[in-house]
Image 1: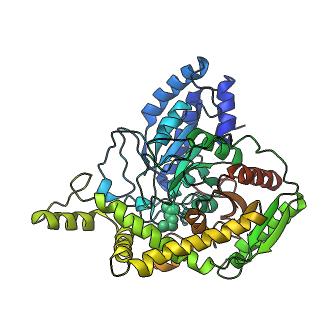
Image 2: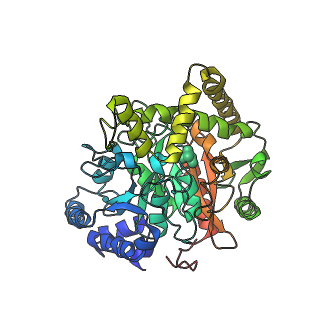
Image 3: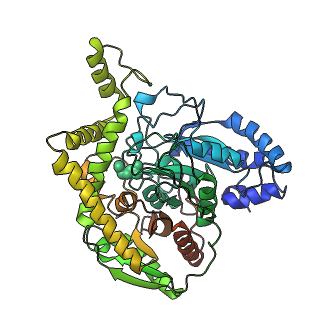
Length: 490
Ligand code: GLN
C-alpha cells in the first residue's frame, strides 16, 4: 500500500514493526507538501529540517521503549492558534505576525510524549472567527477536492492538510463548529470533545466557554487514538476535567445493534441543500439496516441557536482580544499620536474586518445599557437549549445532524454576506453551547464531487458512544476515497 494512503495508525504500526522508519513518514508528507502546497496553501509554516531530526529521535525512542503508544512516529499538523515554544503562532492575524510563544500548549507536550512529529502550523480564519478560512490575513486555503472551493473553517488548513495527504492527522479547535464543518467540506473525520476534556492551556482564546481543541484524521480510529493522546486533566487550565474514561479506542468496534439515534426534525425542514439532505437520509437507512433504532424528535429552540451563539461568542471574544493592544504582543502601528491613538491604530490595522466586527458586536452586547437585553438573554437561551438536549439524551444514545446545510461554497462567495455565513453554522453551534462531544464522518458527495459529512452528537462524556457509532457507520460506508480519486487537480 502506498505510504501516503495509510492512516496514522497504519503508518505507526509499520514503523513499530520496522517495516519502514519514522523518516519515511516524514518524507511522505513533505513530498505531498511539495507537490500540492502551492495550490492548496494549508500551512502557514512548516518545519522540515526539525521534523527529520525529530524523526530520528523518535526512531530511537521507539526502539528503547520511550514511545510505546499507537501513534509514535506519526507526522501531525497543528492549527496556528496553538502555541509551540519558539515557533510563530499568528492565529492567521496580522496583529500576531511576529508572536513567538515562550511555552508549549499542553497538547503539544502531549503530542511529544506520544512520540508524534509536529510538521507545521496550519492556516485558519483569523482568531478562528469564520467558516471558510478566507478571513486569514495570510491568504486563503483551497479545498483539495476542488481548488475553486473553500475548505471550510475555521480549521480549514488542518482539514485540507489531512485531505490532501499533507499530514496524517492534525489538531484543530472548535468553538462553534470549526472542526466539524471543515471536516465535512474536506471529506475527513473530525471530533470536538466534551468541554474540559482537552486542556486549553496554550490555545489562543476566542470564546473561552466554548473553545475545545480536537483531532482531525483520515478515519474514526485515528481520531479516537489522537484524542487519547491529547485528552487528560491539566491543572494549568481551570476548566479542565478529571476524567477516568479516556480509553477512547476501547469500545470502538462494538456493534450498533439496539443503539438509539434521534434526529431533530427541524434540522431537515428548511435551508438545507437537497443533495445534503438526501445523503443524510441515506445514512439513516444504513444505520437502520445495521440494527440501530432511528427516530425523529422536535427541537423547539433551533431558531435561537445562532443568535445565542454569536452573542456569547462575540462577547467573550471582545474581552479575550482586549490584550492585543500593541504593547504586549506583536504588531504596533507605525504612526500614532499618544497612547490612545496607538491602541486605536494598532487594533484597526492589526485586526481584519471580521474580527473587528465581532469585537464591536461583543462590546455592544456587554455594554451596560444592553447587557440584560442581549448578553443575559443569550445566557438564558443557552440554558434552554441545554435543557432540550438533556431531554433528548434521556431518550437517545446519539443525535444525528448534518454537519453543514451545504457543501463547500466557492471561494469569494461567503464573506460578502456575513449574516448568511453565520446561518451556515446552524447544525454545529448548539453542541458548543451545551459542551457536548460531536464527530463528523464523511457520508457522501454532491453532484460536483464535493464531500458531505454527517454529524453524530453525544451527551457529555459520551465520546465512546459517538466513536462507536461513527466507526460502525464508517465500516458500512466503505472507503471514501481521496481527492485524487475524486478527480481533483490539487
Ligand atoms: N464559524 C463559527 C464562528 O465564526 C465557528 C468558529 C469556530 O468554531 N472557531 O464563530
